[in-house]
Length: 592
Image 1 (cartoon, rainbow, N blue to C red):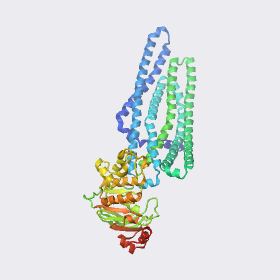
Image 2: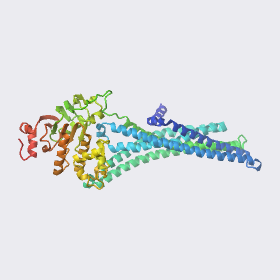
Image 3: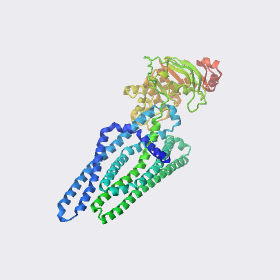
Image 4: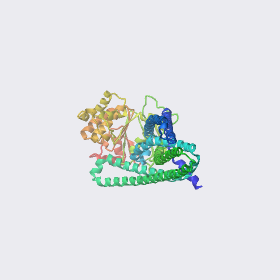
């Protein structure tokens, strides 16, 4: 019973690699060429002992010089064939490995882009990137160099065993007694190697995630003088990763030593027995030499298989981690037959009894029985204390999440009936925390609409007053801004985000504290641009500074996830205590 369990476990250990087979089977021609070259190289190698046997049995006397010359000439031809076929096999196997890992990375990255924000609430981005880069590199090894070595030695092992049997059935029978001794450590240590390989990859991913998180916030680390502590934490993480990797390496080393000792020990025993047979006249020296060479080839192949077995187990662990990501299903998906928004889109946004909580905080309601309508052509402002649920509205409108109860509708259509990609094409967003990507200023403005002409992008930049700083940069709009826009100020980044929204020219506009990072002069200029931008659009504005929204068509006051009041600025100052309190804090006297 225990043996069956072990066998089943060993069989399952490589199952994650089968997930990668569809990527391999796309390239059947290259596989066929690689296998053909592999077989030719193996046959060429297996021919050599036959020539050695004949040379030994014929002897090296001058009477047989012509025959010996012919055999040596034949061996030279075999060596040439071996060289050409080995090179061909190497090229195609390595090509397959590189192509497969490129395909896997493309598919995995495409899948990661489709996963809902809820996934990234609990998953560290650095660990995901580690799986995308480091784990796929291990897959490449499994399908290139490791696969090449494994296939070549597997074919050589089978061929050598067959030739051993043909050469001397008696000696082959004795060699067969050693096979269980070779298989046992493969089964026993194979499972341990795979388990440790998975642990090593997990610890490596954890250290990569830690490093990425700290380096992306390097100014925060340095301003708090936490370089030493951060370095110490990373050192502990890498030390743990090293200790797990060292255990994996030790297990592989023990496995390799066991296989080599058993295999070569068996050859020594067979050579001793064969020598007795030669001395007793039951076997020729040439036959024994031929058998020993085949036995060495078999043992060598078995030894190399034991070495690459650990690498294959390691790749299986990586494939398992990749499969876990591929098996993650986006929580937000398009329905089978999605509805289509009418064109031209009016842009009415309606919340109908919406209750919502974030997946990671099921006990805390972010919104409670929320109902309101944002009408086309109007500016609807959303105000309230921090944590009142204001930004959550924007996440629901873009369908990053679905309500627990209730509906969000655009022009009367429940957005759950729409393809999320089609929905988001009709929405432009200026977030409070502007994300800038590495590239030029112009690249970042075009991010929301890559197909826009340069003239349109420049017009959007002028409308957002981004040209005022961009033209002063060393290369103007072609200036590289660095990762996350580290060379730009907060106000400059925000103006790029506004230009990006202007360029999208979407009928629904979401502004989340769009001018919070601007100075007073820039804010006045951008506010003027935003007033032009909001014309004839459905605009929702989240604001903490009431001065920026006092002229809004409608102001919604939120508190604790509830809509507690709505109206114009002057109405709310008189009718709502919370709004009046906020206004009193921000203005010298409540406006009437």
